[in-house]
Image (cartoon, rainbow, N blue to C red; front, top):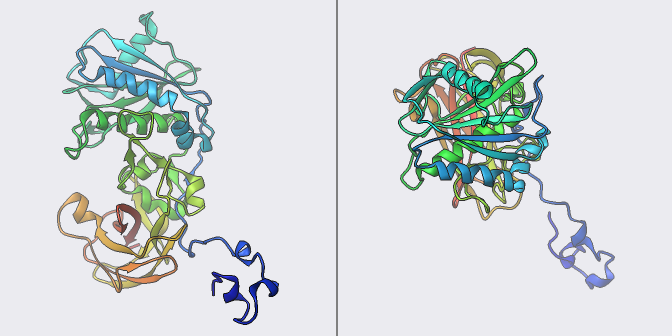
Length: 399
């Protein structure tokens, strides 16, 4: 029993001042999150991070948001608290930024190879173009209606942006990011908000993983947690981008930027999407009884999850935890990702024996595998309390 006053701790008799229990309040243990499945850790690869990243924000003439591009570049470099909170634990240093206004209109359609050719031409032939060094991140802000194709996908359809690198010579690489002009998902978000939110995502990832196709770094999560990267990817921006509250406008920014994954916060059971995550972080973590095979970025990998034959049903425990006292119990919702995110018939039937609880409570989750999904089926456990929402991702597979 937790003692809340000295009189309640001395057996109920006598003067608390004479009981020898003075100071017992100060000795009470701090609030502890209940035991739960560990949150993911983004795994260090064999690549480097940028020790002194330099953003080169490239915009094109006749872009109505060119001023917003310039402002974003200035503000993300000036806001050292935001930049440090999203990158420093991975070894990235302070950011500087410059802008470049291309004296040409952006073309309507181009491939990733066209982007690389354009950059190479500028680097080699334009004396006004900022030259690359080992820390440069060229970030191209393409206005509407420019569409970029890469890896079989088209900007604003299969992807919202990306970052990559290519060899300029035998001893140097060009690191770059693409920020297309995609429509916001809701009317309350402006076109400029959507642009800067995506730009922050890509610039942070490029600083932490500058050579993703050559020497990847912090590009995937630990072996037990691959379900988390099946939906959007395993980089620090990807892991938070789909969650409610990931995009916000901190002091010092005119438009939205993204919270990104913090290994340190996750390891401590705090809100892993930082900075300025939920002050009392809570979540609902499913037990992971089996080792299963799932598809991540086109590759089959082993991870923790639920092994289940099509048509079969199982029940697992869900452990509720928080890193501080909450204002009350939170509400749980289970979502079949296949039908909710991609349309079509559901792959999973999911139900709880109780859909509310708080730190230390255990809830039973029953899952039936309705139809096989190549590479595994995902479920999304959502926890809601007031205006705060958190999410846990899990996977089901037949093998």
